[in-house]
Length: 320
Image 1 (cartoon, one colour):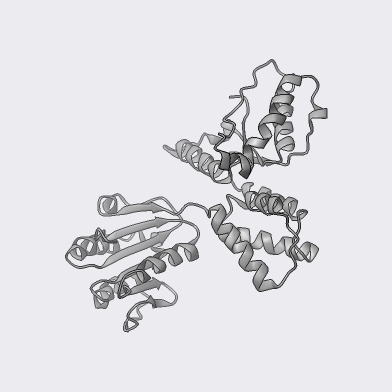
Image 2: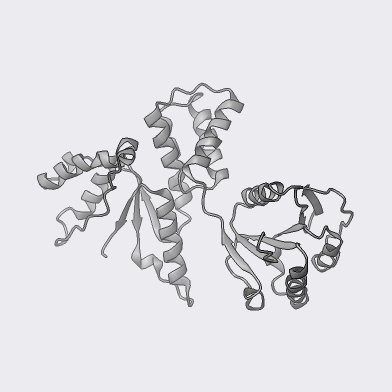
């Protein structure tokens, strides 16, 4: 916004979180910049800065015309505008404003869950991705939920860290729902709720075409032989703790298990997740392929980004 970018497209399914980020940025100015939102149901709404804005059009093209009534330094957030990408008049109007706003401090922000942007707007726009919530954001959300609900919490520091790790990869709303469900199930929060959050994540990950979530129930006793590997795994488990990170010890990078079918490679992957109590994600390489141009690459990027967000985890690439 300081660089006077006139058209920002924020790609995120978390509209509420994206709006909060934009509002916080606008409030940092002195005085705060006017921030206006628009959607097809409620029309315009001022959420920050100068509240004097009277336009109330619910038609997207008319709403674009009325954006000129805003402050010269306004940030106008357009919700669900990807629904109108096929309208040539709307695309032309957005391009006109993107060029005209360069001579003022106005900026348009389009919040959309889809990555598809019309070719006509690509050169005038900057694409921003809102990453899933970090461990810090999830921790603050959990603390806020505990405080507002008045529920008793007997989570140990290590249990709380594991609970937050179990929620990584979820949206803020999904994490909030899983925490609330865990509270309702037992009437309090303790280390048992880690499994409830993991089960909730398994349901959410089922929507991904290529990633499959496995619960770590296998133990070293289920795998015959491989004593050197088991000993190495027991030693390296400490590398995932906060103590190891504070010390500067690098986390384990990966293992290649090579052998003929039936020798326990898949079972070993499940055993590692159970031993280290980390999420196990199986990447189905066959499910990455799509029939449309660019679909395979997009599925691969989305799956790896999700695995990276959930980390630390075990990413099991079978039949590589």
